[in-house]
Length: 178
Length: 173
Picture 1: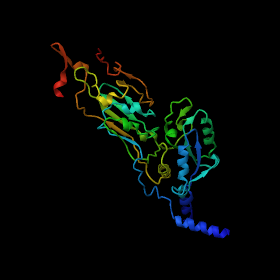
Picture 2: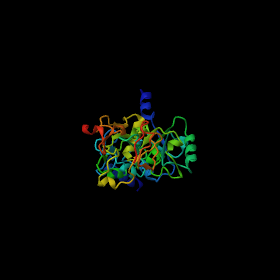
Picture 3: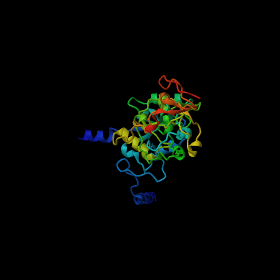
Picture 4: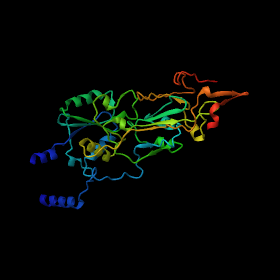
């Protein structure tokens, strides 16, 4: 019973390391906001540590940049084996607005393998807590890809083979069906 | 003296009470003007691609596989939720929702893809000329963004390439 209780209380304590590889500091402020008493994430056992060697989770903010990609990879390699990477913000998820700039390599998943994505510019503190809760299995993810396909066309499909010559005009053969 | 100040501090802390929000268990709605994930309404969209032309992150891709169909793909990965697509949409087909709980383990979950029917002039075979609001949007004509590698191509053609429509060449004037 005590073992179960210990597993419940301490088994999923995530120690996070906070790595910014060239972001605008907006996501950093939101991550630090998560640690304040209003959005107290220490009730989930989450603690901010200063060294990647103590960390279970790396929170990446900012795109992978030409100057910091190597350092980001070394910080990832320094973490002990069961490790997760969270990409926080639209820069880390997809490269940001300056994704095609020369100094930006792209999303951080080009450098380190990303497990969870939290989009937003910056994401709300609630959104970051939600991403952590998805990772811990407390809640289910809400988003799913949407595909809309129009199967019934309101007008018959146009094709040049249906063009007919009538007198001195060229008219479309299926015109009466419209 | 020290003890008194500690007691005073304790009193202040007790007065403040519990401020932590029980967030994942009990949600709290976002503020009114909060811009979350854009939702594309396929029944209202006319396929003018104004959102794609005005997206600062080049998030919305447009691809014309044939004369009648236009594929509009929203990737969602580097969207900054600026709302310019919703501003420029002449039919108000894009709404900025209040969804912020978009955390996922697959980045493809954020995408939305619309395959739209485009009207064609029954006599000449070209697409209709747009209304005044659409005319203000730049880059008319056929677009060929790369859907597979998710690249935005800053180019539009006035006619489709003959190889796209199955082996029957389109008559050009």
